[in-house]
Amino acid sequence: MIPADVIFMPETPAHDAEIDHINEEAFGPGRFARAAYKIREGGPHERHLSFVALHNGEVIASCRLTRIAAGQGRALLLGPLAVRPAHKNLGIGRKLVAISVEAARKAGAGAVLLVGDEPYYGPLGFERIARGQISMPRPVDLDRILAYELSPGAVERLKGEVCHEDLSRSGVPADAPAEPVRMAG
Ligand SMILES: CC(C)(COP(=O)(O)OP(=O)(O)OC[C@H]1O[C@@H](n2cnc3c(N)ncnc32)[C@H](O)[C@@H]1OP(=O)(O)O)[C@@H](O)C(=O)NCCC(=O)NCCS
Image 1 (cartoon, rainbow, N blue to C red):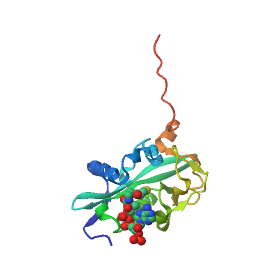
Image 2: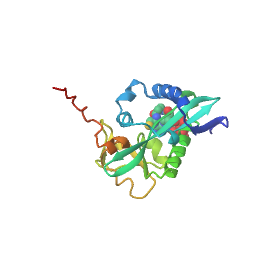
Image 3: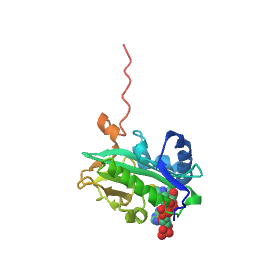
Image 4: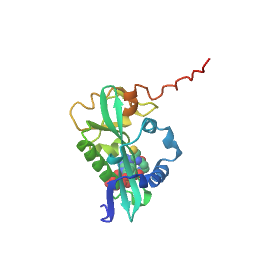
């Protein structure tokens, strides 16, 4: 059971350093090589749809949502989700996922996508996406791509490589080489 003195709130810039520390502790330096990290590099996360758990004023868990695009489809990417070791197995991770999904629904998102363990996220309403429907900018175990559909058809519309939504608007694929610099003369 979640202790009564743990509170949940949208994150603010003041939480950034603690969130970085929590993610480093949970995922180590390998986190930078992950497919989801590469997608999140494409633009900012949605601060008002990202939440922290606080205990005695200290951040003990964090969950972020980031706008993504795949073909005509749009969704929110959930993660990283991390809980500090001393506060694990109290239901804080599950609660953060539930708060995030509800916030995504209220924001009008069609789906929430993530790369994660089905045994954990399955009971929370996430389902595998059909193999081959979408891909990621880095290798990923396709069985770990899970989605929570909030509006009918939203998951089906996700097709092809997933990128940050900002990159889809600019029309630049996530891995496009930088424009060559032309020298005058
Ligand atoms: C995964 C994580 C977020 C879970 O947070 P938490 O607050 O400890 O989890 P909850 O209290 O909500 O749920 C605990 C339950 O989930 C189970 N669980 C935890 N991680 C799991 C996993 N990867 N796969 C399956 N079940 C898992 C626990 O065994 C426990 O089961 P029980 O209720 O039957 O005892 C946390 O362990 C963590 O930060 N891990 C490191 C980072 C990580 O792997 N993040 C998720 C990757 S997307």
